[in-house]
Length: 448
Image 1 (cartoon, one colour):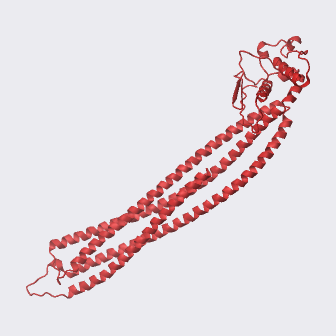
Image 2: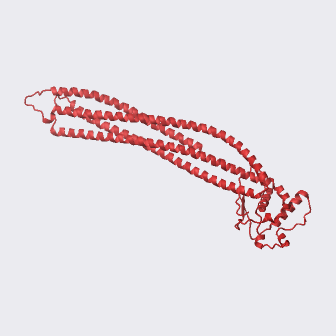
């Protein structure tokens, strides 16, 4: 999981570098546009000289008369209006350049922060490796301690069953926690992908804003070229008809309105890009915190599950190790109180799950406790001491009848749970070869 997260962070860094390159290209384009604006200013000075010359011009013929629309004062007014439009566009470009510089600074800061987080992740990986070694040592210590505790608790079977049930419940709880943390990690990954898509859309919006600006500048340049073409004619006098003058006015006004609209749209696009950039940075910080928190929860859950598995393995080893002692203690099991079934045991399906095996006890062929104990005693005597097979032993089921205690058949058919557990464990462990590493086991005791 850590490697995947690091790859995702590297992808985010690459995308941020691409956005930075786009911003640098924008800066270069803005510098070129500034150079164009300077050339426009030089051209305006030339236009002023031409207008001064037009004011000084006199008619060559006496019968020549100007149209009312060819007044040089009106041309000067139009030129002044064009100059004011150019100044406004220059100010707007300066503002957009400042906003782009701010974006560059923010991107640089974000890149530095991401680099710091990457360094922290590498340090955390080294720390995790060292912590894993320490955890292995502590696991060994816990294993030894639990084995010692099991040696003391093996005399009381009820404590073992309670401990097993507690370990099972803890493992189930920790597995649920692990699944929840995995779902949280998947959710954070989806959020990171959404932020990547937002970054791409912002880049597209920036490109569109740049194209709109270029189009507005091109329209302004066309309008200025028309004015300059009218002013730079070879004739010393400018003679315009009323229709030509009206069409020129309409074109200039339309170009002015179009340029203003495009500049406003470009500014709105830049503002939206800034807002979306801030939102993306916030979402990225939240996702980073969520990933760290989920990582901690996963590590804790894994540690607890491993501890529970070690406890189960210790219980299995203790049961296998202390099986002969159980056989030696069997002759003293003639007390009827040890075989009384507790009242809270229910008559459900009696099953025992051990190492993935399902050992079911069929109710159609019940086996008495006395028969189980007798068979185990005979096997132990033959293998260890070599005593004769026949022995004066009384079945624990028949003993209440001899003492005059008439028990019902249903009470006699109830087997002793822990005796069954030890019997099945002894059979499985005798048939199974010794293994170095025991798998984890889940014991579901419906009825003991």
